[in-house]
Length: 446
Image (cartoon, rainbow, N blue to C red; front, side, top):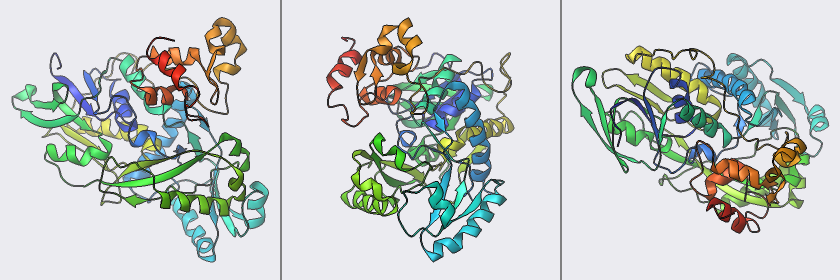
């Protein structure tokens, strides 16, 4: 499949794999990023709570804590430069029982051991002054002012776009089915059997998410096992947004499942979320539900990330990356690059790309609610009327945005990919009214 052996193949084009590809692209390396799916960011990366964590509640001294703190800072800076939507709403950890209230000082102390010093306790009166629509009975809370929401769709797409722009070869719909070692000095490495043909390389980085343990075993590992942990979530209509100003995390649920593809929601899970949500925030009872979904986290039997590099095997693994992977992604990528260098991969910076961004970060389409969308930008519409032609009325998505997504360096492979790039079909009608028009544009007939 490849013309010659690549220097490094990264297996997995989720948020961690794309971050690693983007980071390694600053060096003089021939890189291939491959994934079994037909698009980037289709697994755990697209189905999460969209929280940009501070790491306040990570286990002090753990690798996760260190990489989460570093990665969160890097992602905030990167998002600002690339136009990835981030809203610094702050978060509240609310105590509803005497036992939960008694646990708050320990959580605060844990945050301070992790280096997060902005955390502070709130008395019940302060809490209700901040969030007056909370249900009765809250005894107090911890405020974490730097917790934010971030777009989980745009983030891996931005990393992949930058990597491809720097010369990384993106190979999708390429499931790894086996590996064969290649002996021979500097020519040593691996041949990967994939559903799109063989791929040869000198080094491999495993960032395969829910399949990272299976890939690890192919390379002689086997130190961890992924047990998918399903979390169910409910999406309320955007008209419910004024009920709350801060992140008040309810759910997701956490159920270990044997099937690595089981992202079905359950009646019991959704009932429990609705009941608990309406008790904590009674106003939700009158709000419409737009959608419900489930995501799978790559949980293992270990309490920490499984990240290592082996120079003898020319192999690195970034496995067991749970729900914090979005926030920690750039920290993980930086760490993996360092491990590869220590293991013997020669990292020679490309001219002008030794530090910081590879070049100018890609200007990503803005999908957030807090900024200016194209349909609101009169200058943009004046320059190109296509941005004023609304196709998806629930989400105010224009024909110009859909056109741009289809012509982008990493275009969508299907309607789901187009949703993640534009929000088309993702609103309250879930594509009932716009699906035909969007499909025509996708097929090039619009």
